[in-house]
Image 1 (tube, rainbow, N blue to C red):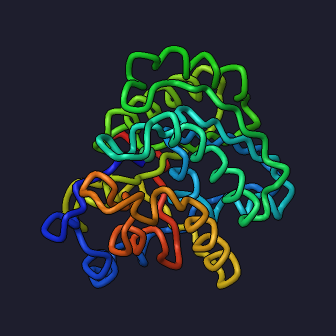
Image 2 (spheres, helix red, strand yellow):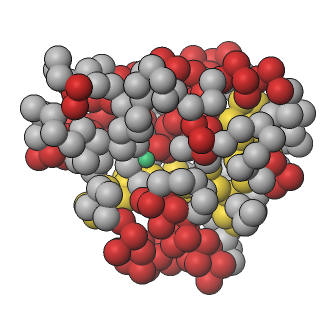
Length: 251
Ligand SMILES: [Zn+2]
């Protein structure tokens, strides 16, 4: 995830507001087939864990082979920081490996595309091409929502939609930034949303996996450009006891 404006005045829709509304907890359950191969497309290292870490862990338990398509290495998360993009490009994929370990997904396949963080849109066709090689009518593709409010996330959603449709794969989209800017009554197509409940073990493993992304959890230094991209108020929206996914992300 690139740095949101997470100053104390710009923390987005608080998790308490989402939960108090009650609409999310009343969503129908996501239907799922045991053992189905899963390809999850992450624009930045951490998106796969934030949005679907619990589902990935549960799917893996039923025998699903898991492939992570790491579109960028997340080097643009801290512009102006004393930690360079080159250092972030080195650190963040290592954090993905640790996050997968904490989810029990040591045997997940990671496909690194190495596209420029913040510039994915210009390479949308390349992502679609890569996904066409990985998807089939037997696979489920999880990808960031095509209307998520971040250009990289939206480009991934569009590419995944095109590739899934060409291959006959099922597409399930993952809102990430939408939890920040949307509200329970506006922004998310909740009529297309489905809920995936997390048991205590999956929820705890997901929380541990999120913490593997230390470059996003901890400030990189004392300066304003070093601040954590995933402070507690942002993480809270991804540590709820269920995940919300979109069966058809069109508004
Ligand atoms: Zn992201």
